[in-house]
Length: 192
Image 1 (cartoon, rainbow, N blue to C red):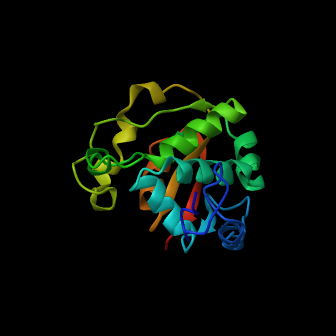
Image 2: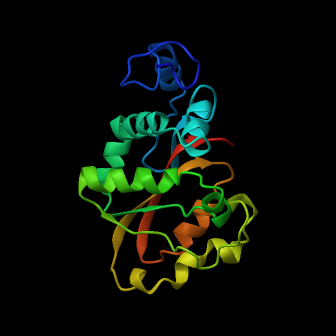
């Protein structure tokens, strides 16, 4: 088998070679408990290629490598033990129609399973148009606000998960949708 980012030979069970994994760890970002939105890594090579391989090419080895990297970070564990609920940033219908992996949902799902946190699923169709998420309007991004299952859950700590953030606007609207929650957001990579 070959490394999914550089093409070097790797063990059958691996998606990344040691050199690429080492480069990804060098992309780590500093974290502060005061920040509402944190990213684990900078969206640069080889992480960028790994994410594209998982989302666009639907490469299961790349997906498992991302999941393993995400769950192994100490800051991920710190926020997971802090949270009562975890919710992924919703994916666009454009991504679903083009058969892209919903990486944010999968990361949130595995985080909820590993740390026994209640997973709140995003609205499936409510308010989303068939275009890229970056083109969605503020009204469409606030579709969460009208979900009846989110009301009356009390004052809880919510961890929002996204794969790649650019402007942070989607996470800002998600946070506004949960007025009774203390929300923090964790992104795999920051492309801003």
